Length: 214
Length: 81
Image 1 (cartoon, rainbow over the protein chains, first blue to last red):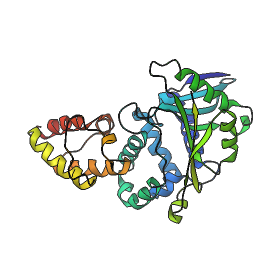
Image 2: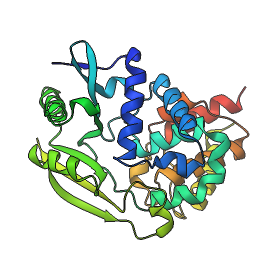
Image 3: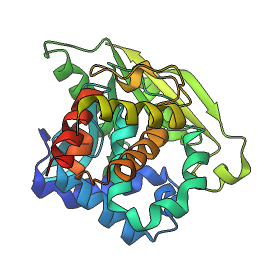
Image 4: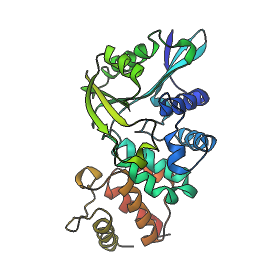
């Protein structure tokens, strides 16, 4: 198996990885619910953000690592250092989505505030791992773990090597939680979602932050 | 537009959006230093800046702003054309 940095030709696979990981094993795509958009619309917005190449947030093609088996992409994840470009990744992502989905954004302000109120702030300076995705036919083979370890190992070679790695996900995603725990991650923060309206917008009832020292 | 005038307007916007009434507008000011500056209030602030100064930022400009100094420079450029 080869692990390589994503390029613009990987956009279709990266888009699949983003959409499926956002759903977190459910059929709920939170951006579609928040904006009142279809899945195709959300896919189109994220596609346009990927093409814009905005650094410092997860939807930036060079942040993605792709696992390739027999010439085919089988897994992906996005990794970046939080706050490295000055603004928080959540701010950059929201800015990009507000720009792309400008026609829907103002009508979605109540939903946006609800979801923002249950987010866990990412640790500044930490290696962030997001959109960890393996194609269904290759699951259970430890490919995601290899990708995670690859990102951690390569981050150690940077001049400003991070001291912490962080993964955020919905707490109900137990297979993923087990897998990350096996990789040495520990649950550090749990954000229970009490607002019933927020629960309807998200693919779970609580968010979890897992961290691991590097 | 003069920098002092831009800063006066920004102070009014920041005071309203971030409820930071005694905020000092400096070039080095960043989101980390302002209590209520989060992803959503950031977007509200940008919309207020665009409306107040009668300008429109491009996406690359928006995501490239590292501090208030970058924003002041862009406002100066856009209001002088």
